[in-house]
Length: 326
Image (tube, rainbow, N blue to C red; front, side, top):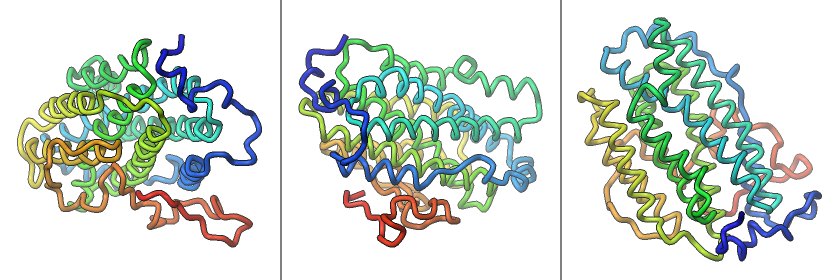
């Protein structure tokens, strides 16, 4: 049953439902969809053959750190998709937004396949592999993150706005520390396959988070507990990072990572129309241009030609532009 507050939302109004796309009604949402389509990729385009030597040369603490990061990712995309399929895609009636969600489901499936392949490639011990594949049950800090995300899927009382913010936190806060850890490997010149897939996936998730913030602007009744939800997500993420990083590594430790989470959380708050609460600076120089929320610059770089030719270009000769300030 639809929440009373949600009954007045244009995004969720059954009268908005339509089956013919043209003429486009919501051009900013449509442009986000076209941006997503233009960056489609598959796991076959990521070469992992050069990673094994680097993986074997990592210290035990580094392997512990990275394997737990990948284990979280392997489970998380399935949770995001469950929410999209069971809740958001059913609730949102704006066709342009539903197109975005439909494409996001496909992209999240690719992410899930990529992370499962990473575990399968790097981890040779069957018992350890099973442990990481079952991380939602075997690693308490990952279980905590999964349960927090899952509770919003089953929540029948919270407004759409509240759940939209919660899943913006899943993709914008829960993912950000993990992305930073792999970019840290890139700075060290290690594991090119993993780091390239991380560029592609972090670019995708940055767009998904930006999309959630855009939809939030369409709501008449904004979420009234944004700060509380963000704080919850930050605290859970800090707990996770403490379990992943029990010891300090060169250029990477739990304190620095927690500072980065606060920095990213502030960016998300601003994108949701709220003031910063942490006022923390970015501790990682290698993440200056790769902050997950709001500044996804991968689209402008056409990194290794990973933007599909002519997607978003009218008649093959006009430049595709995004007017929103990312």
